[in-house]
Image (tube, rainbow, N blue to C red; front, side, top):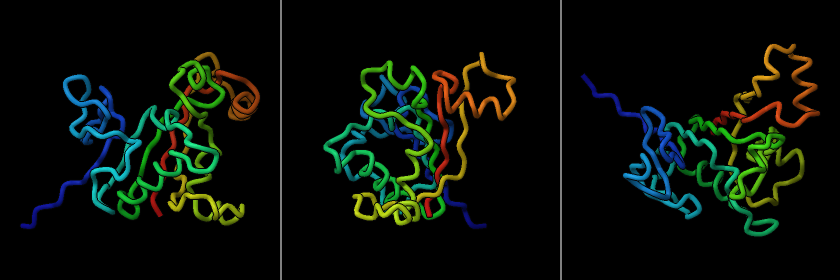
Amino acid sequence: MKKSKKLLKVNLACGNNLQKGFVGVDIIGKPETQAKIVHNLLTFPYPFKDNSVDEIFCSHFIEHLPHRDSFNDYFFDFFNELYRIMKPGAKATFVAPYYTSMRAIQDPTHHRSIGEATFLYVSKEWRKLNKLEHYPIKCDFKVESMNYSTNPAYEGRSQEAMQQMVQNYWNVVNDIAVVLRKQ
């Protein structure tokens, strides 16, 4: 009987919140974190082979990606690097503070706000449609799903009322969770 190959699931910037079944990567290793691999995620390339990772989980990190200058950005480098290491069809899940949440702006180490439109830039088709092919981002991901962690004070409202509040009020949504699929 043939042995099945174990999936490589990577939890980037895991800290002490390592997801079960994932290999943790963080800038700080044990015993301070649950990271098995110590690596600065602003240093490229990552210690993984091309097309080797089956799944990525990354919670509360992308908002920390700094800007280098107006055009060459760690955001582009980060998503290009994920695209390099992920297998075709692999998925990546991101959780980040929503741009209209106090969680997004209260932390002085946050460099950017994250919303639905942030993830448009990782789609090759969207960049082409918007004539942004000159941007230094070459990855191609499809948004598979978006979910929100909402403030309990707003739970139980109709979908229409929630949509209206999300678009017009602060602190309705705490976090956004996005699943991308490598094309």
